[in-house]
Amino acid sequence: FLLFLLFLLFLLFFLFFLFFLLFLFLLLLSIIQGWSLYSWIIFASGFLFLHCIPTHNASYIYTIINTGTTSIQSFIYNSLWQNKTFLIEDNFAIPDADILPGIFGDIGPGLNLAHCMISNFVKDGGQMNVAMCNKLRFGPLPQWLEDNYNKSRNIIIVAEDFDRRTIDYQRLQYYLRPYKRIRVVVGYRRQHDWLPSWYNQIVDLYTMKYVRGEAKYPSFVEWIDERYEEFRQVHAIEVATRFRNSGKFESVDILNMHDDVSLLENLFCNYVPGANATCKGVKDGAKPTKPNIGRAHEYERLATKAHLRGKLPKYHSAVAPKVAEQIKNMAVERGIFKDGDDYPKICPNQTFLDGLLQTEMEQERKYFPEWYERQGGDEGLKKAFEKSKYKLCSMDDEKVWRSKEFFPIFEE
Image (tube, rainbow, N blue to C red; front, side, top):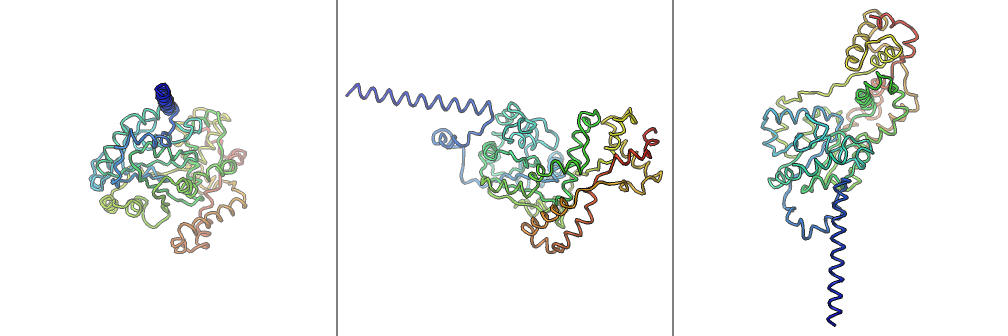
């Protein structure tokens, strides 16, 4: 009998030892790979982390995913740096680059967190590798969250790149512990307005490669023909649907950027409950110091083609925007075009345009029915679409080149 008891004790000790080794192994993997421990840490929390989650706390984390994030980020961080009191009055805490370290600084540290949520990090197109994310994960962020949580403060994190299809929502929950109540706000913009703006932001990132001839400088029409399905997946409606379907968030709201009020007023007065002082600050004239003003790239694309064909030998990426503007102005001054948009154009095919319009109609009928009817319903959207669809067209730069009218301008 004693031998049997000793055998049972040995067996229990052996099983416990195996469990302990498994726990250490999973912990090591999570550190190396950046995996989320959430699925199994719940089991361990019964005896390890029970005291870390005060269930009475009602604080929120607001995650803003928006096509106007630059202006929101500028407003928030410059208000913080200038010691504006309305964020403090509304009990907001804003993580800066010391809390969210990484390759994105200034007003965009939230992007570091977003890129650490991309499932396979750099392999899935992220800009933060595992080591960088571990620095964020095991740095000051956990203690900062714990301190603000215990003081019942709300957190605001703004980052457009939470729109990626491969965001790991469970990992996001884990990084933001002990906060459990996470609200998401996604900014909606009509695709016929958003797609050209998105194209201009993306090609801006590759100017150096285009100028060096390391990649083809695509026109918007070429770009959208090849990559529309890819970028449709990061449009507001698709992003909001993925966040909702994950079941990980308390609420997911879609903010209509075409509404009658400004983006900041709409956000803080209508989508962030309790932001009374910030709402008043915006209404009283508080503005972002860095508005997000995009620019077209048609003349830059033409200038790059001229450079690669030997007509602009001193052209390089640092002067590209300035040279493009000069070429446009000289073309108008010399009567080649009556205005800067009067160049020969190539436009998407009618099937694509009809499909885009139909998609916008369906989305707005479903998500903003009252606003949609106030704008004139289907007829109102058709008029807005017709008025703006020139933005979906590109300069026929090959036709412009063959005309040789710009050669004297290039020489100057």
